[in-house]
Picture 1 (cartoon, rainbow, N blue to C red):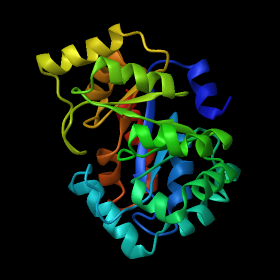
Picture 2: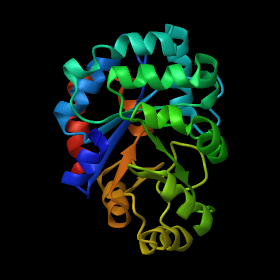
Picture 3: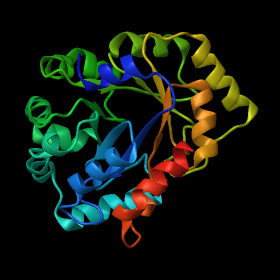
Length: 256
């Protein structure tokens, strides 16, 4: 049982995950931010590794990715930084990014290095489910890494059941099919989507992402899922002065 499973076994509602981009705002701030988030009360973390063509990301995370790349961040650099992760951070940590850098690095090598660093799971939005199941699944499972699948309002029940069967920690429930950084949609069709997922009584917990930026949207998401992910709103905070000192108030503002 990895840290993610332990977390969901001990707490199954109002879970808060925070996303931020490794190497932003400065190259060597990754672990400082992670440690500050844990101390402030985040339940788990998603550390993004940058890519030059982040198609699912809005302007805020695109900017952080480009700045990170300009700062010199690569997967090689990130894994060097993460060698110190478990001396400073105890909560579950996932890596999030696009499949191209992982394939260039080598999927088997990526999984081994992630596991060696103490990473618990990986979110790769553009990794096809078929390729994961038929080609890469063994590398993830051999290294006890959870692969997190994404579900959108357009995902069929059949595919959701398939995802549920392939998952072993949680399912990432997108609040919309748009890019990151928007507002949480609460129209009738989105409410029906949330209710449909909840009624399916999936084996794995669900965490809602995209558009969570304050206590109102966090609380609303938690009515339908086990927790929510804040990304763009936190990345914006990292552009401010004394951002490490601002993290406790930010987390308190989300959790209420």
